Length: 150
Image (tube, rainbow, N blue to C red; front, side, top):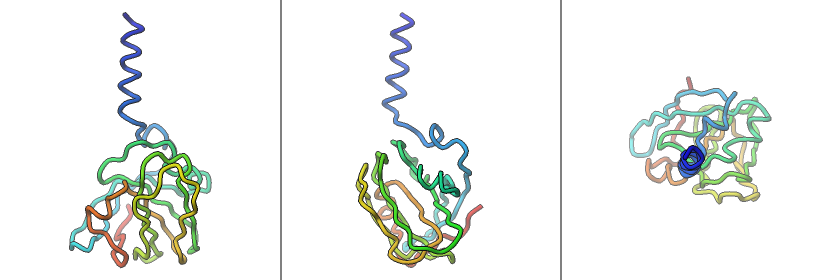
């Protein structure tokens, strides 16, 4: 009976998908506001990737994000950056953001598990990853802004 209960719990946990808290111990967290083209401001709960090791890990192995949850990659200086989806199991929207908060490019619904390079195309300070399709649902476009991080 104990084995059956343990197996049932393990299957239920596996079915619910890997959540960020399980893999992102040691990552900082913050709230941010982003404005959209629909004249709305959205409150986001973010995991912060601030070190090289955290940049490499990103959202690898995460299987589920909440509606307003994401990861913000923070770089020390403006640079052209390239991202990939290696070991990332869900499609993401990647927002490439200048130091002043302006979104300059969006890669929508990126391909899970791909090693294809996704470039910012120009120098940026941040990359924000959200659940695939979020930018369409919230009408976020280049020219919109990431307003605050705290």
